[in-house]
Length: 245
Image (cartoon, rainbow, N blue to C red; front, side, top):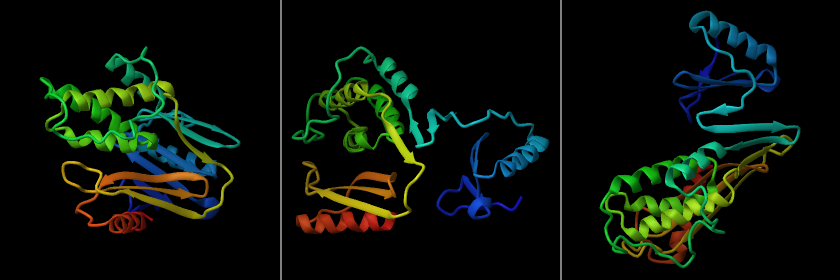
């Protein structure tokens, strides 16, 4: 049908430009169609239905655990139900909320605390939190810190993970907002936490990329090598952000 596969995402297919632009996103048997021309969307749906007998769910509201709400001001994407289910499964639905996901002065180490008897509980929890970071950049740094100890988690690491859950309890519907009216200026911000890892002395890179007023990419990641100065750590952070841009 004239679609071209995107190089940045193999699940994304696009066709046309301007007002005739049409985007098609595929995940196994779930499909999202986006275009300002509804006749093009209907054409693709008719074709897919003739081949696969698809089920048309109408306007996008839910997709792979994501909740999408739209208005004249823009689109909001959250994982509220997923977050509430996570809190319920972990037994933190009635917990006291925390104001921040991690204590600022807390530097986690692999030697902190006593080893957990059952590692699978910790691993499942961190895996679920990682999926939640798709719409929650505010917990990316905390989850990145916790994901370093999947091989041998301790009671201290589990306690830190529980604080993240209490933070999510404070606002489970936090998510991303994509404004309808925004410029196309691409902006990037990067920072580093020099030699913050007490085990390896490696620094942590953090960056966020905005398209106009919309946050479109972010990451918190430990650097691959040890930086000998804070300036070197900052340059590595800028380099990673530049590659993302």
